[in-house]
Length: 559
Image (cartoon, rainbow, N blue to C red; front, side, top):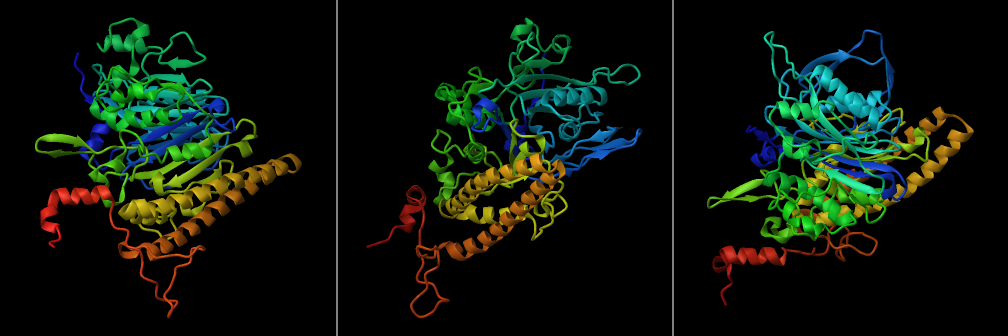
């Protein structure tokens, strides 16, 4: 039976403004420097506003209902019974240190329930409000999808708690209706794998779980009817042990390998303890049979800064390095604007898609730290817009408030707000894209200085919070962490506003003002308001040669 296939990456190549293309990195405790489980996530979309959601813990009446709105579109889907009580959620973490991220991969076109009441975004935030562990969250999400119908396409979901890291993939069953127009196929097919301690994993808009153990409930969970379903649908006929979830529901084409799996390859290539060059042909889009493993052992214990900087990866130093061709312009720009492909003389070419991308709404690195109580251990390092030009700020997930500069009530994608961190970061990013090898490099240096200092500061905050927790009360510790989270975020906002103004003064009109050793702008001998002649950095050698190749005779200086 031939099934139509729809991959999110294809939407991106077509240039759809509503595509969601995200990257998740999963790091287990024995693969992290401080023994925390970590998940990083970038919510990449051309329409998503970068903000921090906040759902305070609450209690509800016996008959309370929860309205469901599709994440990213705000389309009303229906309502389901509300829980009697919920946990506090900040961003994609809750007060019990549960972290959840996602990436969409589309899948078989007929495997979408048009009457589904719960989409992947709603499931994530419902699970965060109702669950303490990754296992609980998996069971709740698939249970709700089975009961109320799943309104999204194929999805990969990262989950981590204090003990475990899990990788879940799910897709709706193909609707089938009886004589009363009732969908007898409501629900999802799904598989979840636990990532072994000491290993790392990732997903980036492509289904990745292939075969899986059917007799190891400690490390694998799956839909009880999965094998009956795929055989009944004519999707698979072989033995259970050879069944591949990813190849059945999300088969790869060139765009899936090059635009999606290449991002996973880049992470494994940098931090995996095996030779990833053997999978380069797969990442290039040339050999779909040479699939990468779902997870690999880490070659070192990763720090928060390692993970944050990996989220800023643009394939530097690899086959896919975007700064090494004419598309980088005259200033080594490691980005390509959409669409993700272009045509010349009847041939189609690709614009690379790296982990760091210009259309990110928000991103984070979440830490679940077992060696601390929940009130102190849960921390989400949160950023908005493109990770390459965006600094992270630490928010403790037991906080009673969130920073106004990151609030979803402060601005939107069509409303500029002078107090919004999203718009402050975007102002700098748009400027940096013009001369990335100069302005972008300086922004990155400021980011590194800030994050390294904040990592040290968090150690001090942890220590003070533990002292309050042990000698006073849980509530006082949470109030202290709330205050620290708010102050650090506010400080970063004003620092970024000042950086915006400084960069404009320094780099205006394609020039670079000269500075002394203390960073002061050098002025001429007669006025402290007039700078000395600035530097004129010009273009890269590669770009100049490209100009000569295309218009050299017209531009050549005659002697």
